[in-house]
Each structure stands twice: as structure tokens, then as C-alpha cells.
Image (tube, helix red, strand yellow):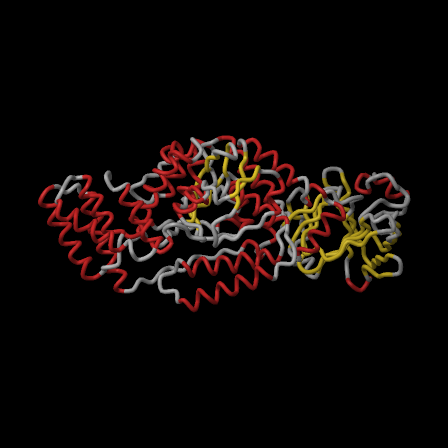
Length: 580
């Protein structure tokens, strides 16, 4: 599998699909869902969807091989790679920004046939991949990913992500107990209620939810489906177009609307066209710290309590947990303080000798203009201008900023990049502001970044690869299921049924083979309906055995009495059972 083109920190999310792990039941569930979706969505999805299924090589008959989808997607400037379940949002977005569709290779269980909160191959392959052939939407997704890469992610977001992943994995894990699921649900509820603010990442998550996942396109009176969450859910694709769901014109205000992944959505947003998605995205981006910068951007990072980056006007980037932005009398940023492992970078590349192990306990620096040069960017001062104010290597210097911050010390070195002085390193240094000591000589070397302003603040470290593992990029795996003997027997039954269908058995041989499988099913699995539905499809398609036909319809009608959901699944299946 080709992953060399990925940055090293993203390769850990890529897994082998292990096609052999899919059970015959998995294949039957895939087939049922795709038959239902194709039938309904051929009339109710955006016109590119059904065409996209064909052009991306996604078949009704079997779970696709992700490497084959990737080959097809390359024609449209994308590729696909398998991942395991939920991956951190930051990783997902960075992959998409590189033109990679991460496809969760896991398959939902028959118990969650209509909908699963966990990402699976139905959602990713049958939902996301086909719509990528639409160029305007694909461009929106790329631009969205570029913006999302800059979003500030809070510690609370990370806790919520972990809680959602834990619950989703449990719900799809054979053998998970009711007690385990209830405990995970309670934990998710507790974490959700503890959220104190909506971060940029959360707002972008909402935009993604109301567009790429649950978006409608067209008019309010007659919209079509394009969101992958709807395109991959038999139940919600039908529900969403009913009068029970409120349709709202898409604007940037969608970021204020939260959602519950465990419930059908009571309202959805409708974009008139795909170009509008980009317009709304840019309106959102204009509100984000990476474009705002300044005190407003810094306060977003401080509130997040996570690793973020402040970029100064010189181009130097300071990454770590920003804990304070000291302001002067004019409310302009005068000094930045970070705690914990910090990194200095330039153009997203870490400066030699300024990694997080060197700046292990934090970082601090003045921001602003020097008193002697009140209108000139400090990074643009020439060597002679520095010398004029006594700043020369080996000499004691005193630097006073317009803000009132004063730095003294002996200059050891000046770091100049692209013609700009971005860093001064001083021995025996002291930094203070209005009597407050911001750096003490006993703390060691004082590395002072230069920059008059903070034009941008963005999420994560500037050089993520060099910075190393952060909480938002932890790679986990969906647990491997351990099937009980009874479940393995059921797999065998479905394997025999699939063999009968694929071998195109006819006449008396077909009746004999089906009768043997069904007799065993009646004995061992009287409550299972999907295999019986598959048998009915074969009989109706091959005009065989009216006696078996009648028996299966009778058995399915009896099973339909279990509950309303089972009734609808069976009736919808019977309605499409005339052809294979």
C-alpha cells in the first residue's frame, strides 16, 4: 500500500483493509443496504451520486476493496486509504487536505443496519466516495480541509472525541455487554454536559455535519441529498426528505446549530448549489483565529488549553500551550507566555536547536515595536540600526518596547531568516513589565522572538512532524471482534447462501440447496430474517419453487411482527426482491 507520499505523522492511521475479515453476514448487510440506497437515491440524491457509484467502482454485490476505489478516485484527483474507525478530526482533515479520502474499513453489524454512529465502509465508501466525482463539491472539501487544519481544537474537544469513539466501538463490538454500553453512554453524556465553550474545531465540525455529512442541495421545497451521512443511511435518507424535518437555507449561522449523532436530525440545511458551500466556508474562516490573529485569536488559544501556534509578523512561529497574552494600556499585545513543551519554527519548519525538549518548560517573548523605532518592524532592522541602539553580539544591551516591556542582557546571537531578524538570544537576561518579572537571569538563555504584531494564531504546532505526538493525533484501532461458536455457525449459513447465489444454481439443484440451508436455519436461527430475504430474492429471480416462495414469504411476515423497525426492513427488502 502506497503511503510514502504522506507526512510520517499521518502514516500511523493507515491500516490494511484485510478483506478476509469480512464475514458472509457483513457481505449480506452491505448488499441489503446498497440495494435500498441505490433504489431510493437514484431519484432523491444529487444527480452525480449514482454516476459516482459506478465511476468509483462501488458495486451492490460486495464490499469494495479500498485499493480499487483509490485507483478510480485518482481520475478525479483523489485517492483512498483504509483507516480504523474514528480517527482524530485533525488527522482526518489533514488527510483530506492532501486529497486523501480516509475510509474506515470496518463494517456495521446487522443490528445497526439502518444507521451506526461509528464510521464504517458503508458510510465512507458508499457515502463520501461517489460524490467526489462532482468537481465543485470536491473543491469545497479540499478548501474545507485546508481551513480545518488551522482550527483551534480544545482539550474538551479531545475528551468528547474519545468518549464518542469509545461508545461507537462498543456498539459495534460483538460481545459488548449492556452494562458496558450504558457506562459509555453515561460517560459521553457527562463529557458533553461539561463542555464550557464551543471551539473553532467544534464550529467547523458543525459546518461539516450540515454540509458534507447531512447536506441537502437545491430548493427548500424539493431538495436533493448530497451529504454522506444521509447517502449511507437507509433510514435517514428517507426521513430527511419528509415534512417532519425542517429545511433551512444554508448560511454561516449553521455553525451555531449543534447536533446529536445518536438521533435523527430535526432540521437540515439546504444549499442552492455547491459554489455556495465555498462562500459560507470563507465567511466562517474570516471569524477564525488564523485570519483574525491579535488578542482575539490569542484568547481563543488560551481558552482551548491545547497546543496551538502564534505567528508573529516577522514570520517566526511559537507553538505550545499559550496561557497568557499580556496587553499594554492600548490593549495591544505586549508579551506572550506559553507553558510546557514549546517549539520555534519559521515557514512551518522547526528552527534548529529550538525543539520542545530545549523549550521544555515553556516560552515567553515581547511583542511590539521598539521605542527607538516605533513604526518599523523589529525584524526588518538592519545590522547598523541594531548597532545604533547598542544591540551587537557580545555587548550588553537594553531593549525597551513601546508597550513598556524592558529586556536587558548580553547578546549571544541573532537568527536571521529570509533577511529578517526573527530571534535574539541573550545571556544574563531579564525581562520585566510594570514591575513584573517575566524572565529572570537565573533561568538560563533568553531566546526572544521578534515581531511587531500577531497576525495569525492557529491550531496545533507549526511543524507537527518535528514536534511529535500530540493528544489530537493519537492513533487507536477498533478492537478485533471475537465471535462466539453460535455466531460462526451463522456466518457459515450466510456463506452457503452467498455461494448458491453466486454459482447461479437453477432448477431442482437450487431447490435442494436452498431447502437444506433453510431447514438448518429454521432449526438454529429462527429469528434471523436477512438470510431468508436473500433466499426469497434468488427464488423470485429464478422463477423457482412456488412452495419455497410461499414458505419464505410466510416466515418473513411472521418475523416482521417483531417490531416496527424489523417490519420496515423486511417489507423494504421484499419490495426489491424481484431481481438480483
